[in-house]
Image (cartoon, rainbow, N blue to C red; front, top):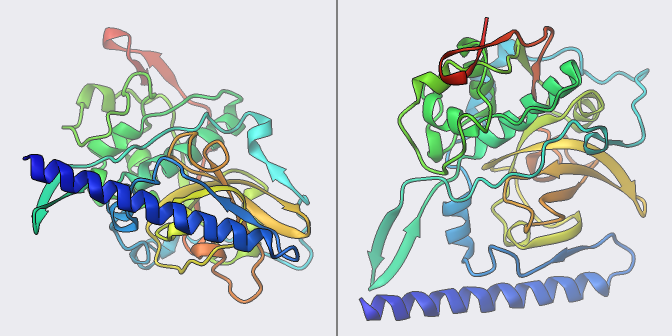
Length: 337
């Protein structure tokens, strides 16, 4: 046991040392390039993890590309970009009270200990879709009703089992469909987040506080996403597996990434700084990652329609046309009528 503890401590030390070296190189290299907008890396909550550990513990495992094949019937036409369209130069839904405080998904999952050459490895997967879904629903509910109600990610982790897989990941569209089929979703206070898979609490599942009427997919390009974000916060999937994303601290992220989508987040606005356009992206890793839980990601990349890290590839949003019809049920639980 002592050998394993010592070996694990050495792994953590070397991971921290490697990340510190990458941080120094990136920040020094950016500061020497005054012609480009820079971003800064930092020794944040993930600094003691190797990149492999970070990917296993905090990113999803499902292939987001499957969803468009299954859900193409939900393709949106309202946000198809047209030359006559005019959108605001900047949008920030946080300033309008539409975005709840940053949450922390933790390393949601089942703990698996693997021994390889006497080295202890902890493998966990994250609830990447639930937080993106809930944030988008919280946003459209506030826009439609004027009331900010924080909702339950744990209900999706526990109860949305038709297509999604709890802490092992899931797709936002399937989660939207679950909320529609269920008639609504409970509050965070009534069905709090635990960070692990539980058996679905049927009493809480029937506490339908906030409902949505439908969901739609944004056309897969940045101009359409621009138009959509001007109307409401939008769920998106990105590739977040790179070390630069892992250690991101501030600035406009222009680092290298591909489009192997593995993380669900929410676009809550966009803007421009020093001639560089950016998306305002709400993450679910607590306030001690990035800019108090947010990341600015480079926007309007001419070379591709998919956007930075694939941000425009799998965007979708909930639709809400009616107010919530709620009553008090057993044990004071709020229920829809």
